[in-house]
Amino acid sequence: MGANDDRKGLSMTVQPQPWPKAERLTLIAIVVLTLVLSGIGPVDQLTWAMEVVWVAVGLPLIVLMWPRFPLTRLLGWLLALHAVILVYGGHYTYAETPLGLWAADLLGVERNHYDRLGHFAQGFIPAILARELLLRKTPLQPGGWLFYLCVAAALSFSAFFELLEWWAALVWGGDADAFLATQGDIWDTQWDMFLAMCGAIVSLLVWSRVHDRQLRL
Image (cartoon, rainbow, N blue to C red; front, side, top):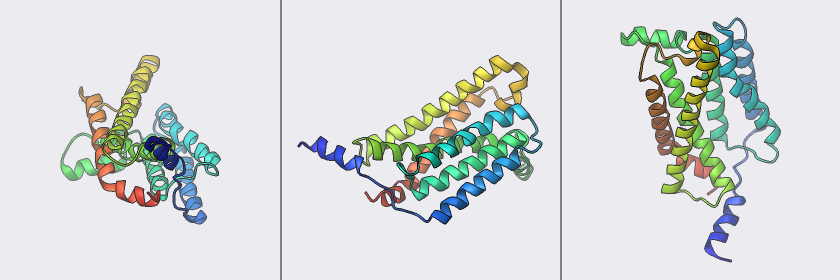
């Protein structure tokens, strides 16, 4: 058996450290509660549906796959955080979130930058998701190539989301303006992808060692 076979065998046996069931159920309850509350009188029904669909589909999928593919504690918390960011923005629309308006007043700017936070998170969380999948399902090991592919995965997801926004504009026209949340910025698409890339890089720099320990690498 060669070195590549050894690495492949190792990668396929990587399993995360177990974490308390009560903690997992608490995270699920938080996500479900925020999802339900966000659906009560949202500012724009179409925007709400397009933002929360990721949570509505992703959470049951994680629960169903958990016996065969349990996630690390780090990834579980990050995904829950991302879900809350999405449903909060979906309820108010990203241009009208109270948190973003408060920050705009505090900083003395006109634009609601909550969507910038959302797109930073769009790289920050998926980068760790990609890292976990690659470490557990491929022969890749921690290092430069893994770092690059995780950033590329997050950036490609961000680019795909921008394509979704484009398609939404083509299908629904002005009704999709709240979903696009450009707020008059002609460079909004580029900002979104740039912030997702920055989020992925920061996340990998901050969390890689913690992630390795939870994967027992």
